[in-house]
Length: 192
Image 1: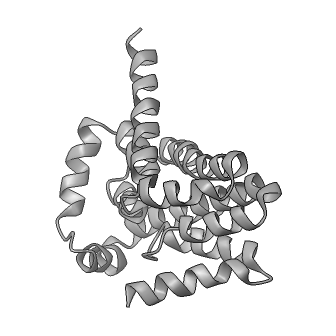
Image 2: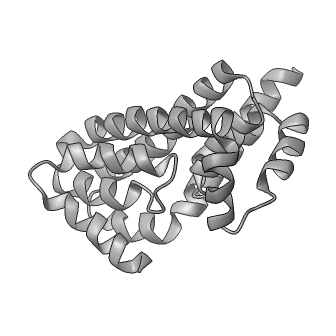
């Protein structure tokens, strides 16, 4: 079932209203949809390399907006909506774990999770449920989601079709390295 949903999402890249669908997928992925927007962003950037950065902007804005919805779900509707979502993803104890992590790591947790393929919806909902500072959450979401989507757009813009297989096979590695670099930069700034 997940494969057919992935294939359907990918088919939207050829749709005349593909940027609209990219925004929709990016928005819902941040709060409940299981397919990441990269599945649509990558082929769209390949088809229109001249629009790659515009597509990354659409992805970033709508992903952050969806993240705000996820935050609101966690903050206001945890028992009614968030707990079933965590259970559906096999993470019924995720809130307690995240609250412990937030107490210890806070911003760094959002920065790392926002750039990696770890389901961002878990971060957004848990951030709201843990009543994490909304402004910090919002700024971290903009930074990490933007970095992730602009990285894909830049690689496609710069290298074109040959980078597609690299991104599809190594996106986790690339975003993890970028996240570690970002967090390392924050740590250096904090402790210098």
